[in-house]
Image (cartoon, helix red, strand yellow):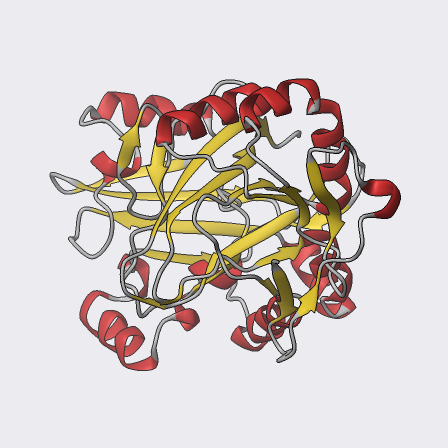
Length: 344
C-alpha cells in the first residue's frame, strides 16, 4: 500500500477507496490518496503491460492528469529505461532534448536523462521545469529505478494552489514588475555555456538567444552573460487556470547560504554571479518576499516514498517538483515531452 502525507504531517494517509474510479478489473484501484489532491494513483493488481495499457487508456490518463497535475503509476513492473522511453512516447509523443540547461544532468539513453545531479545532502526546492525561460516541456516523466536507503523523495505541489496562496500584495507586485534572469557562464562557478546550450559554436549560441529573445553579451575570450525577461504566472493552455510559473525563489542570490553568498559577491561582484534574478526593470527583489513564496511551497508540498518501478507523470505547469536529501544510492531518470512556448 502506498502513502502520501503533507510535509508538515507525521501520520500517513492511505489511498481512498477507488469506488467508481476503478476503471478495469486488472487494477486494484485508481484515485487520489486521502488528504491529498495529487498525485492521482493508478496501481496494478497483477502483471500488466503499462505501455499497452496506456495505448488504450490514453484519454483517461490525460483527463486525470489535467485534474490532479500528477499521476503515479505503481506496481506495473516496468523494468528498463528502454521500456520507460517507449512509455513516454506512447502517452506524450516524441521526447525533448534538455536544452538551455540550468542544472547538471547526464544522458542515459536516447533523450532520457538522470535527475539533477546535485550532492545527496542537498535539497532541491519545488519548481516547474524550465520556468526560468520562455519555453518549457508540458510533460515530465520520472522513473524510479533504485530507491535510496533513506530520503530521496520527489515532493510535488499544485501550482494552482501556489498561485492562490501567495499573499496578494506579493503576487501583484511580481505580476506588475515582471522578472529578468541574469546568468554568467565561463567563470568555472556554474555550468559552462557549452553545456547549457549543448554546442561549442558561439554562432549557434547567438542564434538560439536571438530566437528565444535572450539578450547576450560576450565578455573576454570565453565568458558569456545573458539576460532574459520571463513570465511570473501563466495560464494553462488546456484548463485555462492561472499558475505560479517562475524560478525567482531558486535563482535569487539570497537563496545561497550566507557564507557562500558573501564570498561570491566580495570576490566576483554581484554582476558576475553565476545566476541571479531581478524585476524586469532591473530593480532588486526583496528577499523577504521570496521567503514568503518558499513558505507557500513548503506548506503545499506533498511527499510520498518512491518504490522501485514507480513511474510519475507530471503536468509541468499544473505541478511543481523537487528533491529531498538522501542517503545511499538513488537512481531516478527523467524524460520530457510536449513543448510549450510562452504566448506573447
